[in-house]
Image 1 (cartoon, one colour):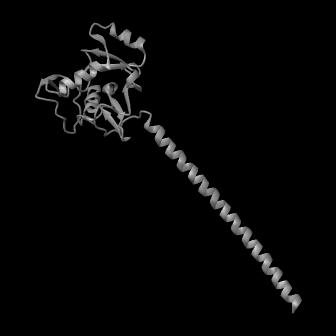
Image 2 (cartoon, one colour; image 1 turned 90 degrees about the vertical axis):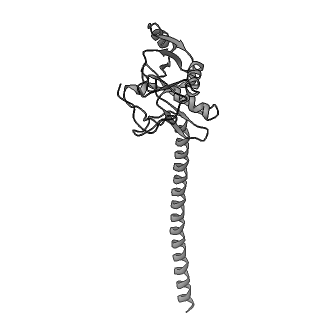
Length: 208
């Protein structure tokens, strides 16, 4: 009986050791999986933060934060702008003047701002862009400003009879003047006398 009991006990101990080893392996595997998931989550969060600091293309149905007109995706897209608000919201503008007016209404600042380089149609940081005003620019809301990443490109463009060098202060003053009761812009970019710059209802820009 004692020998039989000892055999049963040894079998029980061995079985317990095997089960324990299996359970330990499962736990380690699960822990590795949890660590991988945690690392993946951290990477995704990091990517989200990085995305907020970089420009992106607007969606097809994106509308201007200020005037509610559709953001153009054709040749007029070179006049568009975008920004990230202090709350982290991405907003788009169909014309640079709409950006300055929206910024004024928001208290004077966005976290990040971008405009399009007139030469390449690529996004560039607004604060370092070189500004050119041209009466021949038929921009979506008629502000008539273009931006260049390279100063040499801006200087070359200013050689045109209708263009002149400008700056962001000019854009802001122009926008504030129009919003304050001077000249309202129609969808073709032509001036209309109005009592103020009322925001438009959702719609599309007329063909140019």
